Image 1: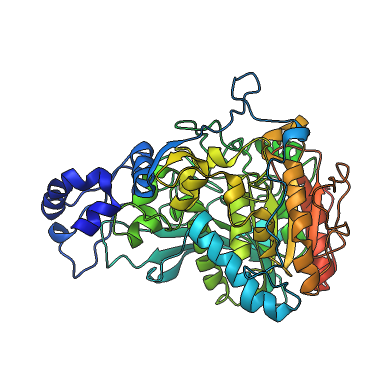
Image 2 (image 1 turned 180 degrees about the vertical axis):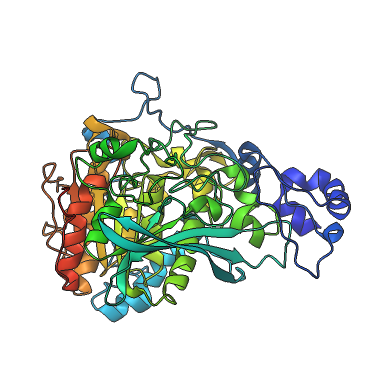
Length: 556
């Protein structure tokens, strides 16, 4: 009991009441999918998971870490007193990044073996402990079931769509049920296995959706634990998060099963019809059309079915299931790492599907899901390619930069759930250990990008004038890509073709892509989406895979 009290000091005085309630009640939580007790379990014997607000959970983590006060994050409103910095002359208070090819003992990494066996494990350990959190060793098994199969037409080509549910074994804690929702769409006339892009945030076909999902195509519904996907956050220390993507609404059900011009753009855009989607994509066909026309398939995975996108959900979802409904320890995984784990379980299924070329599966996301796509690619080397869309702080942007969204935003109550609890230390103004700042972090975003090497890694942004806000720090992300170059070269891949001087290198002009290497960069002239970059991303991938690119046929 002393150990429990030390871990959760906020609850120490009420632990007897909680224990009594756990014995007497089996609680159904608001926003949680209906729990499915294991046959051998007695519901009356099942303890309840904690049901806290994000503020309560956040305070508990501060107490565990001995943090008395956090620095407030900058505000995205430029008229606010604590508005974000957009002055390049003051944007680099911690100009020196950790050397990506220097071991902790000071030795230089000079061979691929040293990278894989020594330096890469060091970097992963630092991200696990201090930034993203550890995936527990006892995560239960996932069993996949095809719940529906349909045929349809995408961009004039016949396709086969499957709805899938990945049930996580919850026999150890039946009060929490986790069913990962995924869809898979492949060309019906393919002569063999096809490359597949897995996309965070929902992709599918009208009439095709996983069991338990709300809405139609792309409408995966609210995540377990409450909160709409993509909802903006305020609250606690810190200003607004990365500008939320629009929409998330599904098209009307019924009608002809065809999604030419009606599937989502590369980002989480609304479904406002073909004209609206074309505008979001810079006039291009939807990403799903482009993929199918070129002989790829696509999969949509619902992050909310894995882990809720809010702090109140940390005692639910996959994190809550493994912790048996109790709050996290400081080095436990956050939502970004949980979403990446869920995508990896989706890849487990794709490896068993004979229509999929499992050696050519990619991962994509925009905004917070751009962060998740980068984390997925960095950790799971089975993913062959990534499209990182407008990811900002917590993604491709350097933590050490003082521009737009900052570490202090991620340590506030609106966004802390993405990260490990330990990450709060780097926003601490007053704590038992004194204070820490972003310059104290043992790793930074350039090393997360480096963990993707030598695989195909495409960093995408839009322009502030169209809604890809300055808040995201496009230059800070470019600096991170520059600083990751040495690892790509060490492992035999081509880089951006620029010098390694991240302090002086500047982004190329908008629309001028750096696409000659396995590490690529392009800033399109659209908004908070990766839609306009798909027509560059797909042929770029085809080039490295020896495929012949085929564009979407012109409308007749």
